[in-house]
Length: 88
Image (cartoon, rainbow, N blue to C red; front, side, top):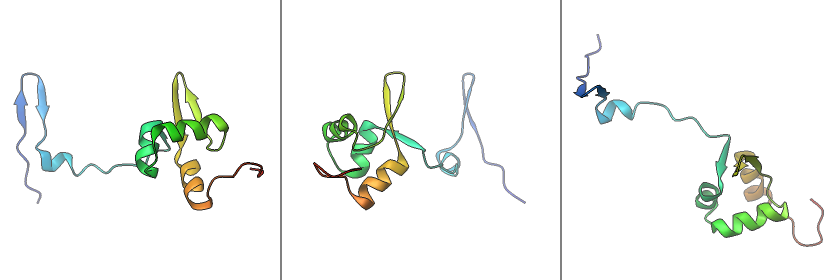
């Protein structure tokens, strides 16, 4: 039988203890923003923006936000990016 974990109540909000919150499984994102893509690839956000503007990395726009599909990042890191004069 599982022991019940105490919950802390502050006003109207119930707060789970930290160790319970860490049990939630994280799902992998389908796409990430410019800054997150830069962190994942260890490139500058400006470099990522330049690659998106040149069409070297596929991107999707949601309103003003530019998202890069994880598949496009994986492909760019595994296969590399096309050089000048090469076909995509």
